[in-house]
Structures are given as C-alpha cells and as structure tokens.
Length: 353
Image 1 (spheres, rainbow, N blue to C red):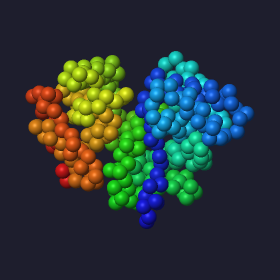
Image 2 (image 1 turned 120 degrees about the vertical axis):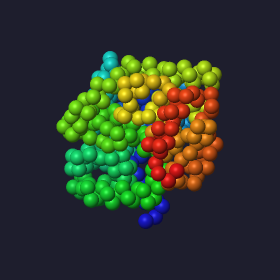
Image 3 (image 1 turned 180 degrees about the vertical axis):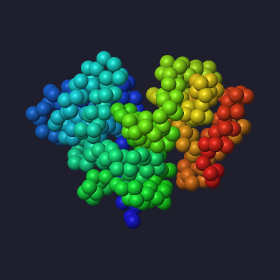
Image 4 (image 1 turned 60 degrees about the vertical axis):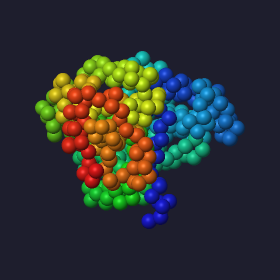
C-alpha cells in the first residue's frame, strides 16, 4: 500500500470547534450574503479571493481564512464553487438558542456534509451517512473503529456500510500505519463534530444511537446523565480558566502555555467514573488545548508527580520528540490534583508507557 493511499482519509480540519461562537456565525453570515449577492457569477479564483477578503475580518493568515470557508463547505452549510447554500443555513444563523442550532446542525450535516469537498472541488461522498449506516449495522462504534472508518474510500463500498468483520480490518490497518498518531488533530475535530449531532451518544470510548444506549445502559446511563449538570460544568471550567489566568497571566493551555481561542476543561479522572464531588472539582481538571486534550483524555500522555510528561510508546517518534518540550509546571500541583494524576497514570495511561 502506497503512502498516498495512507493519506486518503475523511478530512475535517476545523478553523472553528465551537459552532455557536461569534466568529463562526459571522463567517457563515458573510458567506451566505456573498453567495446571495453573486449567485449569477460563475466560480473563478478572483471570486474566491473576494470572499476570502470579506471573511478575513480579524486579519488572520490566508490559510486560516481558507479553512474557515472550507469548513462550511465540508459541513454542508455552503456548496462547492460558491454557487448555493443549504436553506437551513439561514435558519441556523437566525436561531435564538444554541439548542435550536444543535438540531439544525444535525440536519445540515446529515443532508449535505461532504468531508472531502472543498471550495474548488465538489464530492458526492457523504461520510457521515456511511458512518451512521455502519453504526446501524454493528450497534456500536469504538473510537478505534471510527478512526478506522476515517480511511475508508466509501465510493468503493456499494452497500453503503461496513460489517463487523470489515470494520475490524480497517481498524487494524489504521493501527498498523499509525494513523491516529499522525492525524490526531483531524480525528479530534471529527469526534468533536459527532458529539454535536442529535441522537448520538458517546459513552466512555464508544458511540451509540442514544435510544440504543438507553436500553443497553438503562439506570447506569440515567445516573450519568443526571449527574452531568451544565451549570456546574461551566463553573468548573471557569475555575480552571481563573487558575490559568492567576498563575500564567492570561487564560492559556496549562501545558503548552499558549492562548487558544478555545480550550478544554479536561477531566483527569474521567467524568463518567467520577462521583458528584469529583466531577466538578477543579483539582480534577487541566485546561488544555484540543490537541493535548485528546492525547490526555485517551491515555496517550500523562504526568509524573514532578510534572514530567510521560507517554505511550505507540506514539510516533516525531510526536514524542515534540511532546518532550513540555512539562506540567509545579505551580499547578496540590495534594488533591496529584491524587487525580496518580489515578490517571494507573488507570487511564495506555500500556507501553
């Protein structure tokens, strides 16, 4: 199998991870207005350049501007060649609540998303639909299964889904070529999208249709759902942001010490196994960038009591070398957080560390 074949995958590199953010909505509004105003004009590089100039309302680099526009194409809000847009995109823009937008997002993504499309090139492949049909076939998808699916050329699968046996094969292929280690950023974006879609539920590291999960987990799942309090979680994240500001001078990733537009309040002891006190204890958390969160959350990295980073040896040498630049500063350590970190090393960190 050639290296070029390895790199053919479901590509979702996001400029935005928060689809309710002011910048996402402003970008969407600019694109919809531009398409309406220029609907009779055929596509050209000059037309695309004009849209890029309009979208660059906060003076970012050209690559980031193109990512913003291409993300809207991939998700299905607007079409390739800038010739049309999904009618629900207008409703999404005008929605009064995040809950209403969440419902519209699911409809837009299911009907129109094409993860391998771009402004310049259209695609007829609907990867989300393929994933959902596979989920219907096999009942549940582990994150490793989803990663395997991300390298499948669905144009060659006429039945529109994979069987359990076929899924096992692509999962092993992904592991053999270290797909997750090389594409963890794109995988993080894709999982972030799945978490936003209606009727899907990730329990631990497995994706279910919500109705199926209710049957399978019954009272246990209800207990978890009842425990997840949105207001308390916002307080929990705000406490981590305040801690970061107090100790670093601004709200930054506690590991990379960079100020990202969006940061994750990452549980050290996973929420799903935490009791009520642990779930919202800010000591049971680190404020991390999306990239660092997916590595920490899935047990590819952890930290010793002196803050030294440790990692699973299945990571690529290049990624290990990159991670060696970082350590968790002792300013974030206290007795309670060290207890949580010991739990993470003993129970979450993958073997081979």
